[in-house]
Length: 294
Ligand code: NAP
Image 1 (cartoon, rainbow, N blue to C red):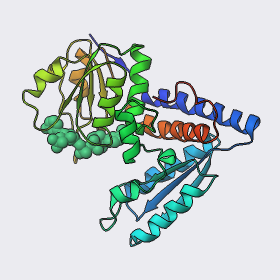
Image 2: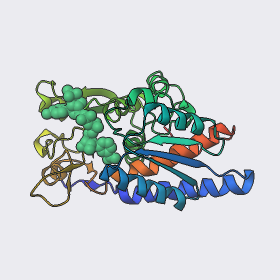
Image 3: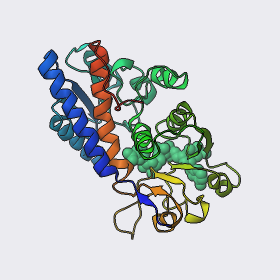
């Protein structure tokens, strides 16, 4: 069997197209333009590239993009003051502080100073709690993108056995919460999991968010399972990016699989835009965009 390739690039373009349609309607019907503020502290090259492409795509869907680039030595007090200003700015519906922050800044403190209603990354402790208790939350973008692709591929996820490999706060844990909410039977595997191959082999859905290139091989995969590869790994001596799954062996066994690149990656920014639209709709007491939230 050769798996269906889930084309994240095309899916993300569709999501951005839907966001753009909603934005156009918000402007025409209500005179509202959603605004996303991105705060970058320091000069990390990967973060700079990421922030630039976020800004470009924000404008492309018709939203306002506000970029705040601060020097690496910015004090915590100055950063918190900027966030407070963005929290109270009615033109800003989403705030994203690019991580990682320079070492002298307390990431938890900074993230938790964002108004939860504008926390489009979904990392604020209130949003984590809301998601865990099944309430309306801002949902982290990468797991939201994975969920959208899974729902699109499977329709209902109810009763499916899902294994999430990785327990980070930004991917593994929220992914598990979302799958649980869609009534999967969920296992979270991590670096201490015993017989991990056997655990993964039970799964109808495997989400790999590990950061270890090509760790999951085809012999770990149940025939016909759906494999979502979140990993983005650069390996010296190998061209391009590698996922956490060994694509060539997994594709022979799986029913469907996301490639790297071109799978989960493009969905993350698309979901950031979807979250900004959701935040803007909620802030204005309007109906949430259908199919663009969890
Ligand atoms: P992270 O915070 O480093 O977490 C990695 C997780 O993998 C940890 O829970 C760790 O377990 C687990 N792990 C490590 N080695 C393992 C092993 N041998 N067997 C089983 N589990 C193991 O990473 P992350 O931020 O979640 O990111 C994971 C990957 O996704 C990275 O490649 C990252 O670049 C990528 N990513 C992609 C996107 C995107 O937009 N596509 C977004 C975010 C992240 P312990 O907790 O036991 O240490």
